[in-house]
Length: 394
Image (tube, rainbow, N blue to C red; front, side):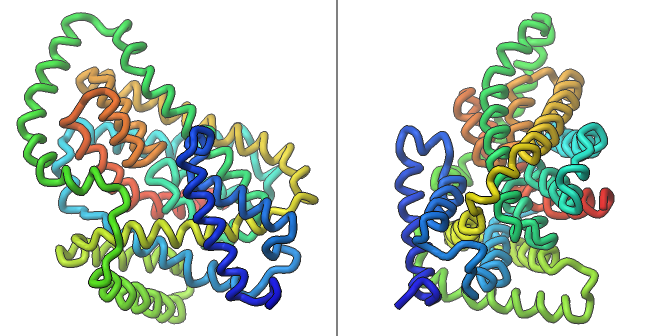
């Protein structure tokens, strides 16, 4: 059996995912994360001939793009329960929504200043949409926009955008950790007392919500059960079939948007939302998609990233800076609770998981569940805003 055999290639792809997951637990790997390691190791394997690269692509790759990637998005959005968003509380929810607006505005301003189309060409607008999506909800929305506009088929450009995104996200995590102490120097003692009083009032109402969802929040990747698979596989496949039917009769509607909407509607059913295995299955399918993205990165095209990398860095960093500035202004008028401001901003830029980690770092137990919930809201909104931005700039 050769490397042109789909089963052989699939076996190697799953091995790369396993190695990446193991490496992500090491001291150095933690700085990169599993997703970026999957891309990097996939690229290395392709360039040394262990798996097919873009120039000698196999049919499995296109099938993963067409089938696996949309299904991964579908399974991930099954965990978005829109009815629970109200439990986040008005202050942090307001900060999050303002942060979303700051992200979208930041993308438009950064796009006009950087003028990335001179370097990225027709892919500039889609990448701006990917940026808007990922800094609203996360990689779920990033991939949804990338799939529709086929940015994923440009392996070097896609991987470069992912790498820059990871750097910016990591830096923003450090900034948000330092933000409360920095901003307290500019906050009067009376403002601090008012903030502490408001915080105490919020704790009682949020504590019940925390207790109800604590067990779920502590398990980031629950095990997959046979019973869950018996439900997840048919609804996922039928959702894909329905999406194909909609795309046939309404070709102007992005198929990714259709399958995302189907997933969100199903997620509001209690029987579906309680299937926690959907997250684990979705994440694994995302890794399978990303390792193929890595395989599309060939060394003879890497040199092109010089100018492209600079344009991407400027576009993403300016977007985040503008988002941060607008969020800080909002925080000034919404209680001056800078830890809450930092968590809300992190839910935008890094997602619900990093926002939850930040709440734990600050010792703000009552904000752990709201961080998860607003992160879910970001997942729900990100794809729509990503398409909106990309369409507006195209």
